[in-house]
Length: 85
Image 1 (cartoon, rainbow, N blue to C red):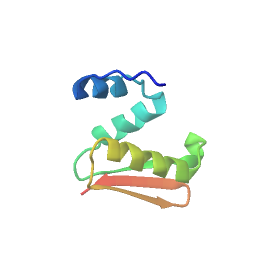
Image 2: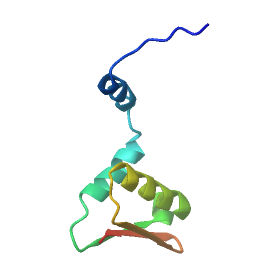
Image 3: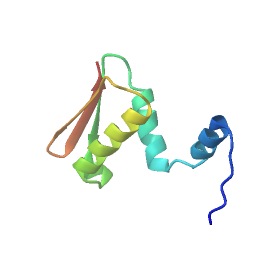
């Protein structure tokens, strides 16, 4: 039979947050948090040696984790653009 322990919700949430973020995720968070108002960011997938779809998906996932509901991410060829409205 499984052994169950009980803890507070705050402690359970703190355990969840203790996982380190990958350097790539931290870099994408910085891109989004430092995006000037009224400006769009552009990432060239060829220069980053990544697939454009991977970059697009990362931006969307990081934007959701930062509660950025107004984030727009578009891909045109190898270039991924993102901005907030």
